[in-house]
Image 1 (spheres, rainbow, N blue to C red):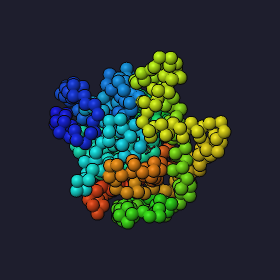
Image 2: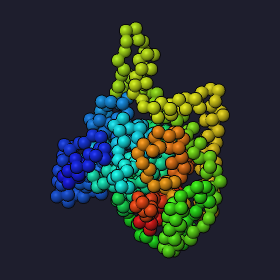
Image 3: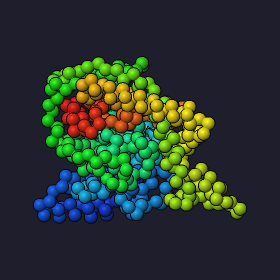
Image 4: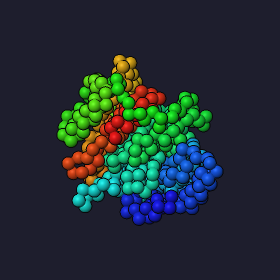
Length: 454
Ligand code: GLN
């Protein structure tokens, strides 16, 4: 804990931690020491972690990197952080992210972007998003692990951009209680760590049924670490042809081929498969996610939380709402609210929102079909490129940024577990990641396949 606290101070230039909690960390570290001395050594005992700013942490600023939550200190602890603390973990502070987890580069944060510790010459690169602070902090050894959340790729893409491991569990595996909601039917929290083993241990501490989240599943949590045998003989790994996109960089192709070889060498059977509705995933996601977001964000009205605009004489409640929301939400969040409100409006609901829900069902069925045909897991690239330069995409058409999520959003739409694992470097020396997608509730096997790729 002491060396992480020093590393965090030395690593301020990365802008990964937006709020440091050294007093809490030292108190928790002392308590962990005492537990160890007493012969009680829970899974995460004394392990220093960073917590994404999307998680409510009692008495500690929890702003979802938004100005509208300025000064918000929750009176309660999220289930995930409470479970981690029960398992002995230490909180070093809160981590940077895209505002309300909307983005792929950490550039929509009210704190300014986090920076990728990997560099090409002097060019500053994005750590990815939305869990960019989590990825930068773990990759730069400011903490041993971090919490992330993933609605359309926000754990897996930043993990790939920074050369670390990130797993999005099956929808319902980890409680969403106390995590600021983005798109409730897609959001899941998961660990971001240096190794698959660390991810297995940390996921075990985060997961489990929680009566406070009605979508949390009452399914036992297996010993994920015990599953890391490296034995995948006879398992069937599917390679979906629809993920072989036009214009895919040669380096991503080569990485994928290398992953396939590694699976074969370990005794798995590699099989070509088809997920025919893949091309509709991105448009469906960018209807469903903003629709749910527009509804979830309605609660930030200037009354209940955080920021309230200064009002002029004669302003009524409508002006209060309008001014507060115009000042408090950044441009990307406002764009999502407008898109979401539009697709849910009476005249367009069937044409957009209902259509997207049907597409979502077809995407889910694609996966069910290949799993029923005996495929155990699916191997794809995690991202269409290595980390890009800061400012490079943010100034472009927003749809360009959305295209980053092309390999990851299908997994959220289908509610499946997905893991990103670092497999190699590109020609410039930047990390690249592969993604493995598994059957529902089979994170243990998925972690084992990922372990083979490490
Ligand atoms: N980049 C995607 C978006 O902006 C995914 C974000 C996420 O997973 N939280 O919606």
